[in-house]
Image (cartoon, rainbow, N blue to C red):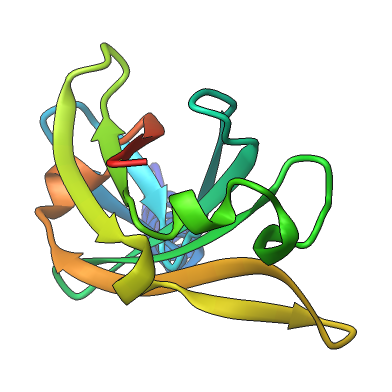
Length: 157
């Protein structure tokens, strides 16, 4: 006579451990079986060295309740306080174009931020080292997991 009790108990126990262990993860795009960690902050950077500019842009994004939350920080590549650079007066009159793209470089979303209206000064040791902005926009969760790169360009500078 075979006893199947321990086998069933073991299967139920393993199933529960797997479910409990997956609490920090969620399936976001079931079409492609992508798994994304909850509350994961993704960071992208881009350097702009044309039109007399010499800036490093770092953008952090996170998906919360149907929106992409973003924080972007722009600083001089050489570490100079950005407001003391010779290009800052021209730069603050322009617009940053932020393009969210998939792995094949197709654009998923474009964001335009006017520097003068959108950015505030970041102070470090009482020196205005960089400028930053933050905000959010509506976005589909299935598209968010496809973001593979962020390119940052300029307009009107």
